Image 1 (cartoon, rainbow, N blue to C red):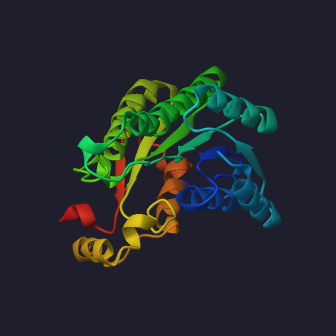
Image 2 (image 1 turned 90 degrees about the horizontal axis):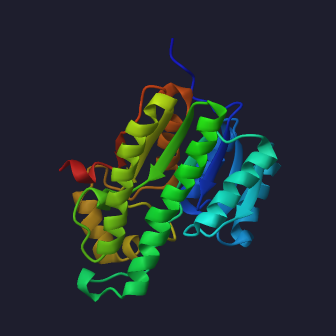
Length: 255
């Protein structure tokens, strides 16, 4: 008997949820029945998404949080627990990429910021949610948004690619260590997706042409192309899936 893909009765935290992939995942989770806590650095765009979700009849709360500050991340998880009584699902999606250019030209502040948000922030959130789940003796799901650049070379985005490779390593180790607690941990590695975050790449005719030329599905991804996979991984339909890395790139890395 297949488990249905829904999130009824579950509480989910989605970071970087004010736009793009994070917003799409938060909306998909709410539509599937979850109570959703949306997080981002600034309240402005975040509250707009939360209000829209509430207007559609679902339950959503917006909480600001700096994705690279473990104390703020701990507070985010605590506020989610106070608001809804528990957390079942975490989607680590907030990310930064301040440097575009050869690896050797990156300045240390940009390097440190990239690792602070993309690695330390992900781990801090996973740690806080996992500790809560273990204390509750409850199963749960942690989904880390990585990138195909964590699986291949990342020219002109070297530090970002390094962090995304670290996220994949973190995902696999957490899956092994938390498996006995029935806490599943998986990663999604999107390809090129049309978001504000990737605008510099996908809106360049030259780069866009190169991407499409290598992509069997012959298109740039959309945020909803990622949210369906994130919904599956959070649901009971994926109860035997952990430690996996799912590429969602239109087939770009298959060739």
